[in-house]
Image 1: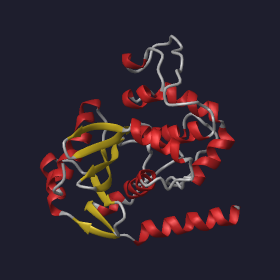
Image 2 (image 1 turned 90 degrees about the vertical axis):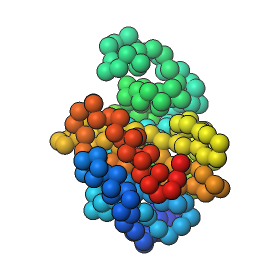
Image 3 (image 1 turned 135 degrees about the vertical axis):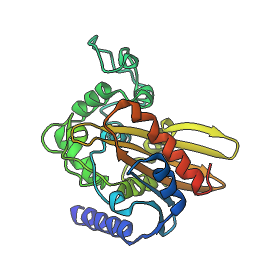
Length: 260
């Protein structure tokens, strides 16, 4: 079984590295006009190409921060650490970074408001051993979680590149992760951000602050015209006032590629 798993992981890693990269000047202009040195990657699921801007940064690994809430939800559900995305995590009564975190909530809401405390509790329920094996099985970034089960995606050693984010999400969208299909469906459903006639947009933001400069993320996928596109944006981010730029630049990049 272990030999089969290792072979599968090597094959998936090879698939990602074999994808052709195409620079898109229209996306470069989005970042240049905003004065932001970031990256954006788009992958049409099932294709052999990556489209985007700043390949070097796109292939560099950074702390995933709150984008790890997507795999954390998958792992929590698959290990039985939580029964559903609506099981309530009690609020502990302590002041939190955001007022929106200060009440009881399930993962459905915790993902939307990016409640760090809820997801740290979820990770503690999973436990270090199961978390390590699950992150490895998901082939998520460098798959290194260290010894602190509730800190590794916030402070390291876990790290992932924008390219790797698109490939992880492409497997989630296709139901190809080593996780029960019904769990993958549940997680996809709670990632929905907005929809209009002809398209649906899914995603999760993140902000890694443990290292300087910090890293702002927006990752997700778009369903449009019968096709699915996974994407990932990251950018230097040290100030909460820059938080809105992540989605703003991401949507502008999608539009520059003829989507949305």
